[in-house]
Length: 206
Length: 84
Image (cartoon, rainbow over all chains, first blue to last red; front, side, top):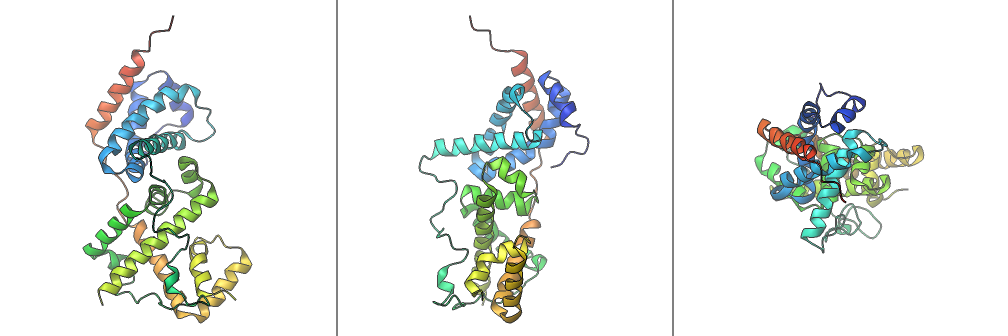
């Protein structure tokens, strides 16, 4: 999703403000894929493309007021994130972006521990324990896909951007407008939940 | 002394190297003695590695780029009429 030939923000911004078609093409080619990815994480497949396109219109309209307190990329990604979040709120007024019914605040179900905090039900021995051998199972791949879908939108987006895309936490928190500490908690919950889903799948193989 | 439950709470920060020195040492000490927690941390690390190997990008077709570029360009060519 990176674009090697993309000029610097200083070069691009005046051209975009000048309605330069080549500059539009450069930024859209470079960033649209990531925008759809973020939109999809927040609102799901069905309207992700539409949200990303709506965000482009917002980007170009807001560009004269862009104060350059972040990179153009981070600013654009924040706009798509906000467009997606407000769309999600509009579609389902009850939705809570951060919380989930399974979320007790514990990283792992408290049932796994005894009253002294020692394992009562320890993690199972996985049949395969290297990432490649685990991923060679198509069944496990669908377990992971489904688990990602079950996560609340912000947890899903943070784990996708951090662990799948390898983006740094600072940019992710700016894009999603969450504090560093909150972002970290959401990331940790998402990972722990995914580990637990893999563990459940491995136990069922026994 | 940290409990196993404490270790699961700190495992992510441990793997991300975000724990202060003393807490990191406490976690290490616990892991030396507890095979279940070793397994937990190993599995969490495997989970993070699995995620890093998942498909990263959504390819964008040329015609999608063309459509967006054309509509943005046209939108800016026809600015709103100034309000009287």
